[in-house]
Length: 295
Image (cartoon, rainbow, N blue to C red):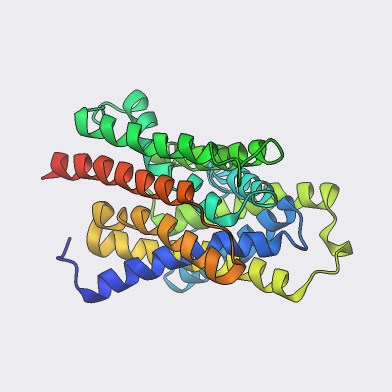
């Protein structure tokens, strides 16, 4: 991997902004669309740039190969379930809280890796990071002004969505020898296939008369926050490696909180800020432990 240059840091910041912008756009999309429809449109529009890239690079899509069951399972766990859970939760929870809750993914993945891998065990630094990060989430749930008995379950569903990403990531190790573009294109295809009957029977989106801002947001979620963001992630991974790319974890909750305030004027309380700091510090310690292990 080459030494990161200014362009690499700019692309990393752009990736963080794109992923962070997804949260307030999900909120806007819920003004007109149900959570299943949002999940379907995200994977449908997200598949377009990925499959186009595979076509022009002549990368074979193996969605219906002998490994189809892995693609289908990962598509459901890594795309269908979290996209639905996040959209459902954001209907009742501020999008800046969703950004903080979803940023626990690196912490959850560290816990899961301890039990399901041989070389990713806890050490003192990792344990400290996990405890600090999750203490920030517990503290966030104590903010009765923003999380109360009416939306408590919605916040938990968003956390469950972040856990789905972690489980999907572990399952992806089963097909880790395949090209990233092929894997992403294949799971997007299967996610779309899974969601077609669900969205048809549950929400019938063709009967909706959506607002313009909701329509723009849901298209943006698919093309940019899902499709283009994944392609940008591939470029950063190839050029700079996983450790550099993982730094995006610090920026997403920060940018998500700022963007939600700018575009939706969402309330930022002292507890939100303290929770945000705790999560970022927790992620820092976990990443620091990973970096020390590599060098």
